[in-house]
Length: 112
Length: 114
Image (tube, rainbow over all chains, first blue to last red; front, side, top):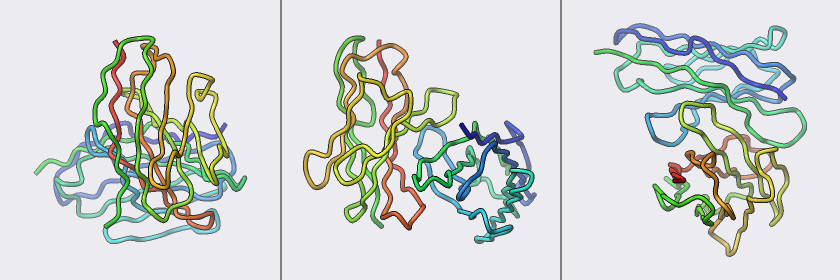
């Protein structure tokens, strides 16, 4: 089964800095999605990138996808303390089912 | 903005008891999901539901688990005889239709089995 694996496991930065998180997966995908989870809360969808796309932007978020390396990165620019959360990548298989397979996540701490 | 809701937010139960976790998906959504997250671990898929039947389930979703959409709004997950290892956060999610990939997650129900 495919898995998303993020690195680093934890990232600590200062406000205003950029944060980059990486995700690797093992099998073919239809799309890859990034979610955010604040401590003890639900998952919030951030951005989706399809297998035929290489880069996507949404506000301060930039996502890249390299299907040849089976990897994706999430860049948060000009980070804020409110960005402190866990970030997960999740893959959707090409099968037609939309089941999400999540990675272990990166815990981001943004200090004021 | 429409949102997925879940009740209760926290459920404590004794091992061997049955629990029902409830979810109200976004009203015009057609696909429904349950995921769980054991503390400190990744979010894991349990089951997907469409057109009043299970469309996919994981190995975790054994005979102890069942799902139901008893009316036009609720979507429930039942665990017949809870085990200690069922302790986790359970998330419900819904999706608008087949061509729409974004899943909207509820805030979760924390299940503690003692």
